[in-house]
Length: 628
Image (tube, rainbow, N blue to C red; front, top):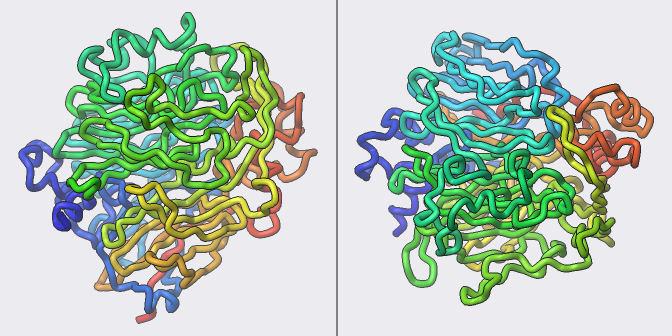
């Protein structure tokens, strides 16, 4: 069992299966080498685990800065670099520069790519001008630009090999996600749920960029690529046109369900896994029904795009609890049997464990005790509400078909966890989760749809849970029991991706700018270093010249840091920014500006105002190593 677990978690099980013959053999082989970091999450299973063990719990306190690299761009730096042999590939927020650095030649810039994009795409980017990284495959670097252009660059020269437009920014569609390489395909999603776009996931041919298939989050079966008799939800067929019948009229055409998160892949099953975002609008009264398949985990066949199974976590979402966070794949013993599992930490505050073969729901528990909008999920398989969250009426934003100004909802709209990815260690069999510890007031209002304009319909404010002052926790989670093993408080939300290592150390960054190292078993803090700006990037590790390095992007921003990123640190400049004629929003919901200036950035500005006391804008890669 141990050998199988390690193989799967490192994305290497494909080399022992029939599927390996047709998979991207070069990429799979490279992913087995812990000296490199060849995928955004390190492996197909999204574990963010490294076998490198030179840095341990005993010596991590001696870490030093080895070198730094300025990206030349401010705003929020999400994602992290790739390392393939001697080459490191670093990306930036808009304008989405890509740098190729030769690690064997004092990190010399071998090539740099800067796309020419219309700056008008900036106002329609939600939650800062972020990008979550590039991907590698077939000798190419793949970048999904803000303007939705997917480009393939020659990894050696940086020259453009092919490009294709994945969406239309004039309608509010943008690109923020990292594409992924599955077999001979490049798979990417779309952003723009707050502009009433219809979410989709698209596969392109890795050689020439020709579209292979596209599946939408809602609509008729022909669009969602579902077989009404074979695609299952909680063990039952979804039925004909389930992505239509759960919407009123044509609302599904502007229904949201965008796909801007992370994608994982099981080569043995040939299934990819991802989640969909919030339904449009944020006003639930305007879209009666379950609004399928927003807020949903999808398992799709990589070759055809056909959905094998789905699970909708938050039917008829009333709080903007996007379901796009990463799906982490593990093989573990559960209930006395070996199972292929999928673990997902949702914005709604529930940690889910499912059988990734069948979609069976196994665990659904709160991973922050303050979550109050639901009392839990109905786990009784014979119940008509099996698999649905039990909503606490006090925290519903719609009652009796009317909008309600609900107060004290936990978590806030940015969720108990947003896109910042968790990590899994096969050594401890624990998941390490960066979380938000934030509540909100939420008031919906009627809004009309206009293509390319914000389509939100809600104002809100964010703050720590009552009686508490900290806004984040970094936790260790047992996915089989649904229990928190240990939890470390953080002053602000933990908006960086975690890294687990064979050295028994887990790393993450903080919004103030600290890189932190903690003991994987106990959570004890072992090391911290303050970088030049707040960290919302993902910690990665690699080996060069026999030495293990850690790398992380600094650059405060993202939804939690939008106040600093967009200069909204006072009510005056927030109001001026929101009042610009015709502007959309980096921070969501500008149509609410006249109602409540304090909701600039949809509540994030007020909730995170104190960040300006600890950090400022930046854009740099900081690399750490033990002293020689």
